[in-house]
Amino acid sequence: MTPLRFPALLLAGLLATAPLAAAAQDRVLVFSKTAKFRHESIPVAVATLQRLAAAEGMAVDATEDADVFTAANLARYRVVVFASTTGDVLNEAQQAAMEGFVRGGGGFVGVHAAADTEYDWPWYGRLVGAYFKNHPPGLQSTHVQPEHDGQPVGARWPITDELYNYRANPRPQVRVIATVDEREYEGGQMGDDHPIAWCHAFDGGRSWYTGWGHEAAVYADANVVAHLLGGLRYAAGRSDDC
Image 1 (spheres, rainbow, N blue to C red):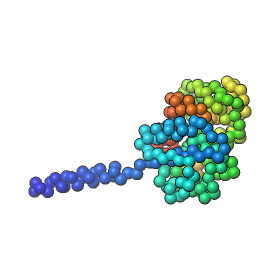
Image 2: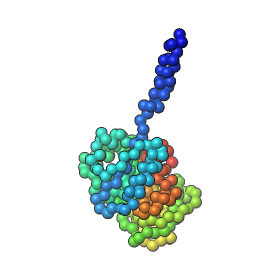
Image 3: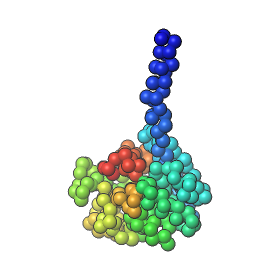
Image 4: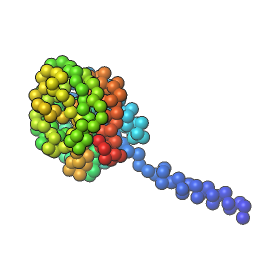
């Protein structure tokens, strides 16, 4: 009987570990194509997102090639990130593939100028939550107020970055997770309620957006890094807390 025991034990061990080996690794596609203004911070943004996703055990592909937006290719991914994209970056077929990805349960993360993208694609505007309107000149210093279920939570934290005004307040359609105080800087146009980051379930998938990310230095801010990590986790369905 002894010669048969080792193969039997080996087979049992392989069967026990097979589900782990066969488990599909979540993949993230970081897309940073620009058709209008191009942010110098994009390489830093992409590198930060790659590092955060990798720390979560997710494989990352970064590209500016819109041809990757096909139904077959997007089916490989759990999350698609638009990292400071601008202008019209996808054609109609590519847009349809992105819509199908989200409707199939995919996650979306929009960073900064993702809101300054695809103005003639209404579905995308609803996915992001709001379109960019304008911003005050230069960089502004303010405090971020984290929020949960419409109530402030935790301590405010300082930041210096470019602060977007949006064409409409997204609050009625999304779950706001951070606001800024327009009394602390010049050029705000949204009044007493100025959301800067939010998330929402949308069309079968999940969407998370942050207005931070113009300045490369913000990607070294521990608060921003934690913020982005929360967005990736939410979009990937790893957390309901965005």
